[in-house]
Image (cartoon, rainbow, N blue to C red; front, top):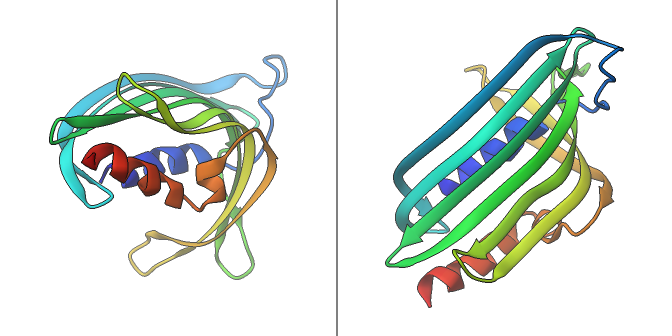
Length: 183
């Protein structure tokens, strides 16, 4: 659940197509939303049962020209058998409000993330993994009979900075988390 929530959070941020944040004079905001959230719930990470506590702040702006800017800070602490780790994500995603509709009916989202998409650390301790900097993701999805998006492919470009978890197709996550929770 935690991994899906983190990926859903990142995917939500990354499901916006590529654009640069527009200058304020170029396009007025038509939506300007600010949200604070927190929750504690039973969870499972990499096959380990525990409890997660999340806290975050999200600021979303949609401009009249169809571009958007989403700035957020997200912290999640997962605890199992007295051990815990923390995920910190903070940064900005820029893009367009609508996906690209391809000739074959698939949808393509292109988004650029700037900041700290994922810092994994032992709670109150050392960093286990750090993805930071700039990255552009091009993600294509089909739509199933229920209207749900089904992942088809992803292309990474414009990568600047360390992105070890992204480079490992997110396998590094469990490789560093499991030993931290079981030792």
